[in-house]
Image 1 (cartoon, one colour):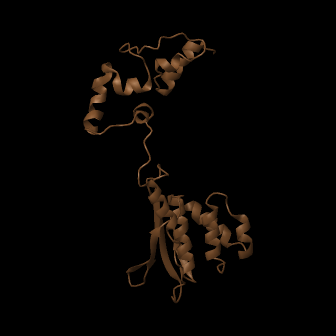
Image 2: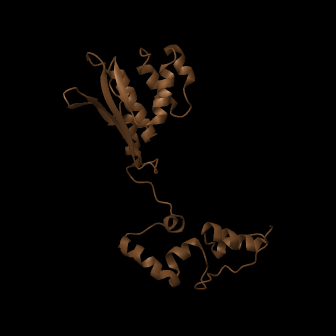
Image 3: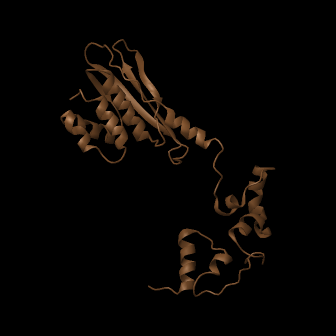
Length: 224
């Protein structure tokens, strides 16, 4: 069913929950609307609705109380865009400066059993996220030993990368080992690569997280 242009705008508002201010609607082809705010009669805009319109002052009140004496820039009021945190570049530089785990095969006798895990803090905010993993050796005495724990180097952070780094450390740390990992995707692809001759593994790496899979291959080249 074809709706007239004016009704299409109304339908879109209902479907998305978006309110179009009059300054935006005044630019729509086929629509003739006043630029006055339908609530208070002043010039309408996103900034006006969010910061200045007196009719919705009660809705703005809790935010102003929370802000206290702090001021928000216009682009934050109107579009929800926040300035870059002052220390963000230092944070990113520190993440890039992290060293990859120093891997040394432990002089253990017999098969070892290790547990790996990885997690990511703030995964929905890639700019601020950080991930890390660990490798735990289960001893036959009922005790355990932390083989490795640390952060994932670089700007690309996720629990997947932390899980992959942890399983890489586990496999490279022992000549005979059973690794327990709860990430099915990491385990499945790692097992697939290990079944291949070492010289062919780098030719079958997935595009996603390719750098870390290449690291996996370099650390496990003697393992089949």
